[in-house]
Amino acid sequence: MTSKLTEPSKRIRRDFIADLARTYVIDESGNFPRAIVASGRTQNLSSLTFDFKPWAKGHSDRRIPDDEFTPFMSGLESAIRGGLERVCGISFKPVDQRSFVDSKGDRLLNTYLPYAPSRPMNYEAARAVLDDYAARLFHQSDEDKKNVLQFCGDVVANPARHPQWGIVMRGTSGTGKSSLIGLLKVALGGRYVWSENDYTPAFSQFSEVLPNNLVVCFDDATAGKSTYEDLKLAVTRDTANVQIKGVQNILEREVFSRLFVLSNSHRPFVMRSDDRRFYVTEYLQHLHNLEDSEDFYEKFTAFWRNPDNAAAIHWWFRDLASPDFTPHACVKTDARKQLIAMSTSSADTAIMEFLGGREVSYLDANGTQITETPPVRSVFHQRQLDAFLAGRQITEMPIDLTRRKLTEAGYEEKRRVVAGCNDGKQIDLWQKLVPGQKRSPALTDDEAIAITLAYNDSF
Image (cartoon, rainbow, N blue to C red; front, side, top):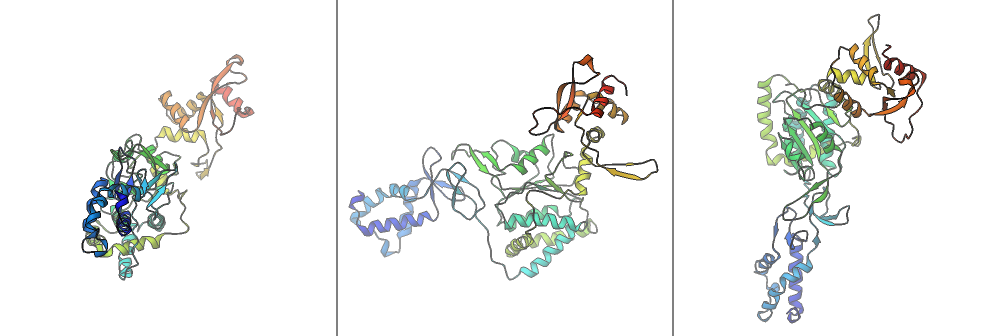
């Protein structure tokens, strides 16, 4: 039937398909091909043929001769399928490309829709309001203001970057923490920001929360035992597996989301002592009092929710982006140390002190505070640690818990011969793991003496 079409009718068909191609591609990841748009909405290819009459109506140069109309329409679906770009599924990547090839060589439709408004006429007036908000939110620390706002500015200016650290903001209710996330959503065109008071949806298997957003915020969510490890993985992972029912099989998708944890609690989750993945702000307080904050944020919320201010908010964040931003390392604040201290039991603290390599402070005989960092303990016997803990009045530490904490700290149990112990037979020691080290180094004289004394209960 296609052979019956004259050249003018073929031209009209090409023009119609070219017009469809501005909106649709063919997704072949499912059981049958379908037309799909960047939002993820799909429809059958046959339904696109019904768009021809509205497209041609009122245009004399798009009229198909009567004797060609039947073969034209009967072959249109096949022509559409052959004329539109084909993809193997959809994915999110914050780059200005309609489709892209992933690491496995598959072409995917990009669901990202960039928001790039021109700098508006009301920018200066809006910036004054936004600067006032920032000064109020971070009135306790200029350092927090600089680091958090640079982090936020980088979200807007460099959305395809994936920093290896996140933000923890704790503070009294009503100090404006959540408003920062609301502003980021406006700055990104009202999209790609997920904020909930629950960790579960983001960390469940095949969840699309991380790979589908630029900002993921946990706002006063209740933490569990694995929350820190889940957050750490979310911050550092470059990809995540997702599954979209009826559209595609399990896919590995890139992750670009930045993480925020907001909380009214001083300790929103248990943070490990060796953490280096979270910037923790001071505990935010009201600039004056609750009544003053309520009055300010009532007006400010109306300001940022006004669509007339959206472009100005976008540009405010863009101007906050800094070339000094470090995506792979964050500042270790005093507030972070406080959060770790609140997350650490006296037993944890004592074990870390025994293992060495961390800064400790104490008063000498003259009452002077001394701060020093003892060397890392390379090898020791369990009885050495038990005696140290007993000296700190910690005498009921379960052995399984001790083993877990030592393993987390990078130690492993080794069988070794130590002179003066067990009649020359091997004994169990804890030894620091050293990457690439195949053989255990010889014990120093001091290490051997300390282990012998401990093993024979001769302290």
